[in-house]
Length: 120
Image (cartoon, rainbow, N blue to C red; front, side, top):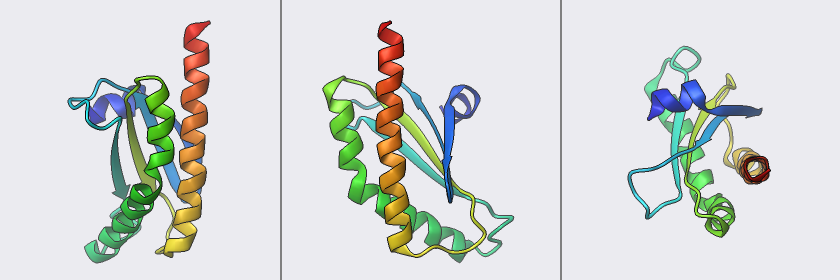
């Protein structure tokens, strides 16, 4: 699934994240989105730093994912998303929360655009 996402998925950047996404048939119908998080070990050699950044990202996503879920409920679509952290410094929570708000709104917009192109 991850190989397909990186090979065939669409991508955009909202600093400090690179977001790769694609519509997918997921193994479960319970959740409309499957998300993954990654932080470069080259930029953050200490695992404790990588884990902190991933934890912050997952928490920001968890608190705001309802926006994306509501948009996907209108049309029974499932989505696979991968968030890659690209900055060189450890972020603070309020900054990431604002960035995830922008990212999720853009995912909703991109998904709507794909639906309208698919119908035409």
